[in-house]
Length: 415
Image: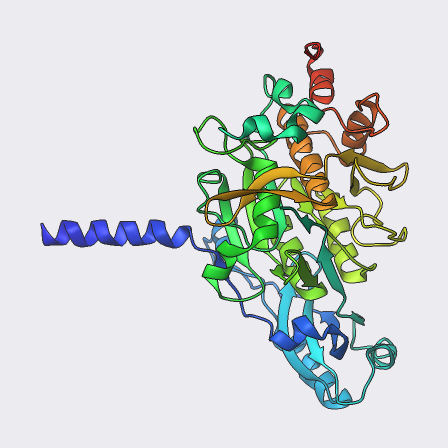
């Protein structure tokens, strides 16, 4: 009996472990608060294939290997540090690009621009760039609650659910942490990783990621709270941003790169990026690699952002803007972004505003469409969503009309 109880206890412990976010080496606080004092450098990290043993199988060989920084790559990093007086803060091999990426602290008094110029002329360096900062795009505001979800009515999401609820679609939320224990997210999150710190409690208290996750995939018909646009989709939560005092969030090149690489490795169908910042070469390379593998990326439109802003400045990224705000350009897809009822940490609910919520709405609607047809690419998705818009000045996307167009059906007339 004692042995049985011990085994049962181990099984319970294993289940509990799978619900905790997998944490990685945390970046020091200085990296988060003063990114101008750091640079991001990559070096080639070509793996040397190991000779297989007689009788071994390809599957066995795949399972036995993992991508890591080579001795040669590490030696180059050390050599660069000595040459330029740089101090390595954190490093990570990016399998998707075949490189080893390092965050270096600059010597006292050295500017990032001057150091980058020197590094770019060094043959040992694959790329060098600033440690860019990014921010989430929300502003705070003040299925029992389903009637309060005016965003669903505006996009006719409830009618769209007769044909699709996002089943089988994996969505990556690269954001802050998420309250994965929220009653409306139970069973919706299949993976969670923390690229910022090792604070599991903080992960679950983060507001921005929780709000975004709720708009996309809050559970339905569970007799609590609200319903997401794609309530049967599966969420992969990657914490690459940290909450700040204004209820928004901040991120940087390094943490976002880790989140993007994780999403590509997980082979998700859609990546939600409810954030914005300057053009970033490393992050752009990762998005382009993901697009090559058929992943759809959705980004939030920032106010007064230039055409090169990350991520919406990248060709093929679906650009989402709040339908209640000023026009974000003819290439933007509009969705509700003011007073959107969604999830808050500790099992709560709240109204949130910003283009972050519009991006989540576009992501959720894309999941509905992909659930019906996995071969739809970003261009076709944008065509479907852009052509199925409301007739009023808001130009909101119409989820029902877009979904119905794939099924040769028609939406019911509005009441």
